[in-house]
Image (cartoon, rainbow, N blue to C red; front, side, top):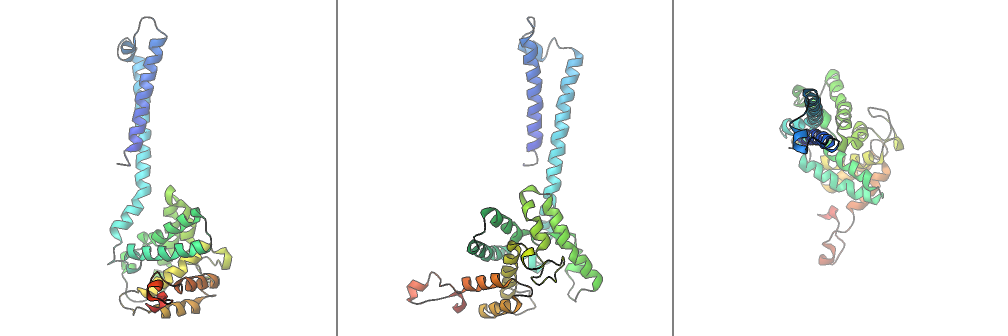
Length: 272
């Protein structure tokens, strides 16, 4: 339905101009009434001009509708094609994204991040691997370690994801975050960015994503306990992850839960 809106709007504009021309003719003519100016007593040239304007507006409406469809198509294709069976880490995926978003927003509020940046972070949590739409199934489903050529193709999904989001206006603010979401804090990532050159939203996302991947790993790996995962995050603090964000996440995970008053003692998620 949303794709028909531009067509309808341009059609109404064309009809409005058609009627406005008839009203103007009737107003400046003593011999023609409105209906006569609309249908009768109008020269063929004027009719052709009116219909040409209407046709032009219909073409513009169709072009706008087509452009909107092409912008939305990557998201639709991604949702339809990349299922849990194809990519465990991304489209297991709605549930994983929700968990990552939950932890990310908690940290964002801790760092007093603006609402605008929180919205971009929300988009990143759901679209970080959207560029995998351009990676062949043979690579995505490969169980053996990727060779150099496959890895090169795989790495391109970062650029492709950023390109896809950049042309979708409601999501475009997160394009830069998707481009940088695999950078390492020590500068050994794809683009070589380090420390504060990596956006805070990305540094927050990386901690939440790594934690979730350890707690809910791929089928061939053992799930870690919360304590194990937090220790692993501490291990990567300063190399792959921002130490300040890791410390903030650990602090959040050690906060007493809503059950503490009921139990009469401090009860943290790490004890669950």
